Image (cartoon, rainbow, N blue to C red):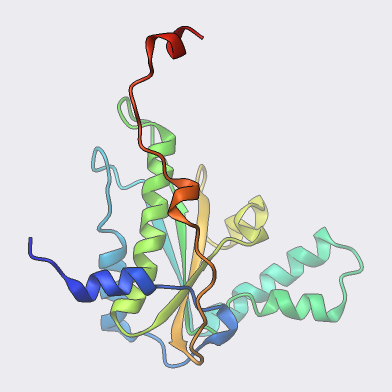
Length: 200
């Protein structure tokens, strides 16, 4: 496979764009199909497809937010109007949000952790796909990924859980990069343990 400098440069500079800065226009129907196709082209040991996707666009964004506000009001008595409004806007203003569900299946050779990691790859591929089409994206979880009632109302089935929601839209600002880890702090090269070390 030949070197791809453009892809290399993208991967070296990619960064998330926060939900508040993702505006219209969003992907059209053809672009959405491309996004979903790229998203699901991920490592999948056993070809078991242990993930599902839920698309929120148009009026569904505000409708989902209204349900989240109702649940938040139950979970947090006394939640003020500003807090409720924040919940109503969980999928706004981004024109498109795609929820990624981990949907593990029993398999003798593929442990659940590996299946969850595959779902995480779907979410990150959505981010890459958005950038490839000229948009920007932000992958978040939020409380409703882990709240059973909220997750169910947002499309999770039995045994499924959201690994996150990927917001996609046209960036309204250029984001400054954030500090990245020094490789010396996070990378080590494996060496065979010495006999003394193994015994100790």
